[in-house]
Length: 308
Length: 248
Image (tube, rainbow over all chains, first blue to last red; front, side, top):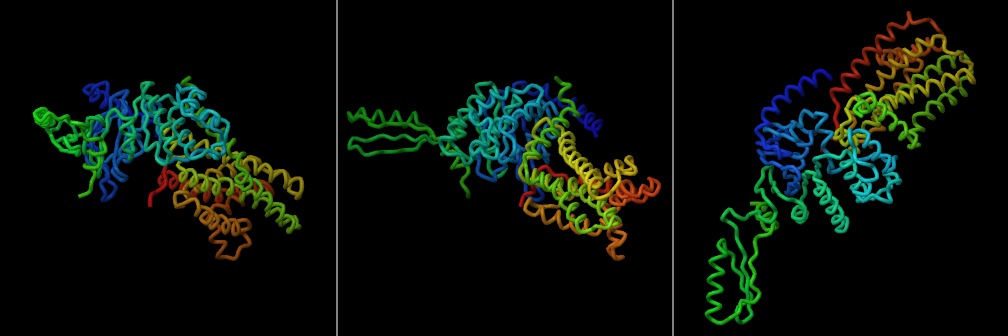
């Protein structure tokens, strides 16, 4: 079995060296035409995206959109039905040891050894990697200080989730997958987790984050892909999503002379503002409360994922 | 550094972790160690004739092999799968084989401790001599362990949830133990079933090695049946293996 695997790896290695040379070396992940079928159900229907090194990339979408299937293919848990996937220069489906040593994974729900302490657990997992981070350092990074000698079965849900994160960091991975890392958190715990994820970015890690929380994607991700029904609907920086394709509706609001609030939507705010200000000047009025807002990620998201 | 992460080192590391966790889980420790010993004490209290004890002590030894490998691994694998621990380990650089070897090694160590306990208790309290043929004893224990460990892992694939595990395991464990401890004296239809299954042959082999000492020459058919079940167990254990809970 060992020999078989090595020859398979070697073959894929040469294939990948060939294709990898064409790919930008700055890419941590490249996905082209990815499809995944479960029997009659096609969970992922032709997805393309790439993630640059050092970037936080968010896959945002409603439950059942295909986010988890996609990341589990990238993590090497599932075989794809079609398409090409490269993660840190490897095909994750072949599960090469080199890739598993360089990737950290926080799954949506996973158990842990209940009878070990936090420190024992981290120490065991550290021993599985060639160049792990220090156990104490990871305890601090994940916010588990004070709990390191507690048996894991005594931890709260939020603390267990932090242990999940700690276990994903212990191997000092270059690339970290976070599948809905804050689902079920209270707002304070969520802020804490966001700080941790920001510190991962500061360490130069590449992070792939799935979430169905808009504000989470907005707060953390450099770029976001909105996924629905196994397809990517739109992709870009959260602040720019929906902008620049000519169809963006800007919302312009102001108060007229009698203090009444007016609101107009336009895809050409320059002209509208020119007309408004010219008319106001001509009448000698001020445009109190004038504002121009671009659609928020939430507007884009709700519009795109609306049914029907 | 790379040397410290070889297959053997990682297997050993996982084995040590499994041992530590085993001792921290009192209910599992009880099921593995005390239950067969309890059976031994109770049955030998009831059966006072030496000829009966010569049958029951190797029978308990066979049951101990079944409990520490087949039952324990079936429970363990279902639990680890349902808890998502298998899936978590799959996401680390730990090779699958090293992981399973660590888990199986833990079960094998339990079996070895049990066999020693039963042998010593049999000698000290129940008039059984030291094993006549230690080589044959080791041979049968090793084959029995591989056979029942693989069958336990294979059974785990058929068990849908951890809640159902007790029922599945005991539905097999209890009747098989019952008919296999003294298969020679079963009614004929039960005897036929017992002889098609591996436990009766393990018990017969253990009895030869521990009590009668008729030598390995008499044990070929028992070894043959065990070997067939071992091959079946290994094939089923590998083919049906799943790292995560089936959905729906």
